[in-house]
Amino acid sequence: MNDAAGIADTVRIALREDIGSGDVTALLIDAARISRANIISRQAAVICGLPWAEEVFRQLDTRVKLHWLIKDGDTVSANQTLCTLEGPARALLAGERTALNFLQTLSGTATRTARYVAAVHGTRAKILDTRKTLPGLRQAQKYAVRCGGGVNHRMGLYDAILIKENHIEAAGSLENALARSQQVRAGVLVEVEVETLDQLRRALAAGVTRILLDNMPVEQLKAAVAINQDQAELEASGGVNLNNVRSIAETGVDFISVGDLTKDIEAVDLSMRFEH
Image (cartoon, rainbow, N blue to C red; front, top):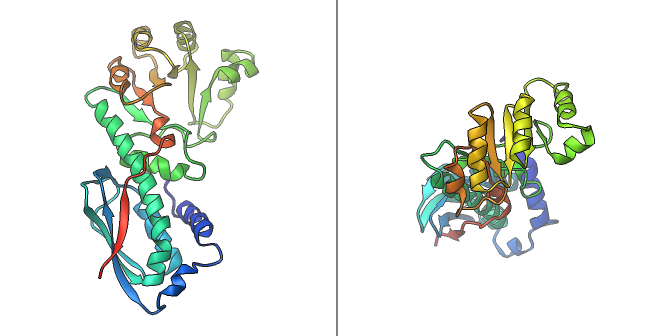
């Protein structure tokens, strides 16, 4: 999921939109100048994005060397130095913003995920991500969720089946949709979304082994867990936030999917400073 080719493609697009035909500001700097700089975290955070930052400078100038003092998934404190860079000053300046953009965004996702994971600690619930990711950054954000201690749901429409209300309507019935799902390649997860306890009972009767409980209040989730009796894995989804995730987890569901992890980004405050 975290492949080098995908990282290289994402970085190439990011550099093209920032540098375009060339960094004209860099022309102010002597091409022969070699400099050192440090990347510093201005706040406590879970850091993520090292491979993307490294790829930024690899594409700009292979003479740039990065010496990381942390690794992805580490928790850092305010004013902690994360990395020392050394190389041509022009390349350091050209790659600064793009590298920090990746690090700040992905660290934001990892940090938020860690907060959710901590909030449900001691329950059976695992925190899942969703497909509500920033366009072009799904691979990166899914990786950040893992760095924060969360678990990935499906990557996209190609690696799992989630049968929702519109799929059931288009297929004619839940049973028809399930029957057709058996024609898909073996090993693909099949999950059914339900909105009521009656729909839950129907899904269980049909032999569904993974069920998404959509927008159910806590009391209804408790009832769903009681009805299920561990027949299927249960995933709670919809309206989840840090204020209610603990109460949802305490109902006994197996998973809680949270769009907030990847769509409501609060970037971590990082900076790069040149040494004198």
